[in-house]
Length: 113
Length: 112
Image (cartoon, rainbow over all chains, first blue to last red; front, top):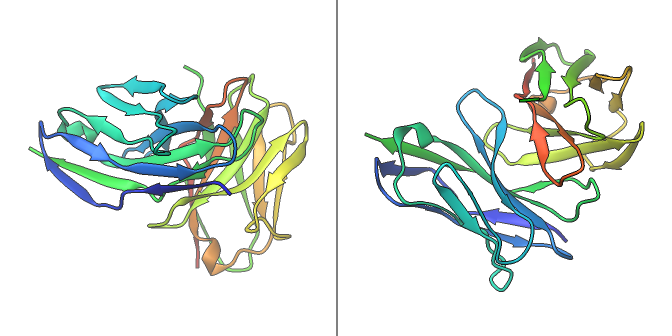
């Protein structure tokens, strides 16, 4: 079946620290992988995506590489800011046929000055 | 930039009452979805809708739930007789030709 396992939080970092949020997946076929971010009081916003193995998605200083051999899509940022405080969700889409997304549990990140 | 909108942002209702949650997907999108997120838990799929019919639904989406696209722009989720455990944030999403789903800001439903 399809599932996403995400590093549990909450995570608290100081400003300019390095961030890694782990995400591994189980899927049939060749899924697309996504990171969504949810800022306080807001909905889910697409942060980045990768549609095939070895693709790297990047946006706003965040990066994640689609690793088929380890079935992982870890989110990284070299230097976090207070404004990055949010909940981060890893998700997979099994195919591009309109199927549902499968989400991880979300990881809450708080960045302190 | 086009976005998915949802109304209301918050809804409080009594157990057993019917609620309708409304969504306006991105205008040229063809796939529509409802998800929910119970406080502190993961985002769960409820239903997908394509070509004016349900294409997939989860076990959560029982007979108490229904979806409709009453006109060319709105996409609604109806809960006929709400239960306490229906309290959650409900997200609408839509998808066009790419694999990306775009989410609305959510409706927070509280059932008392």
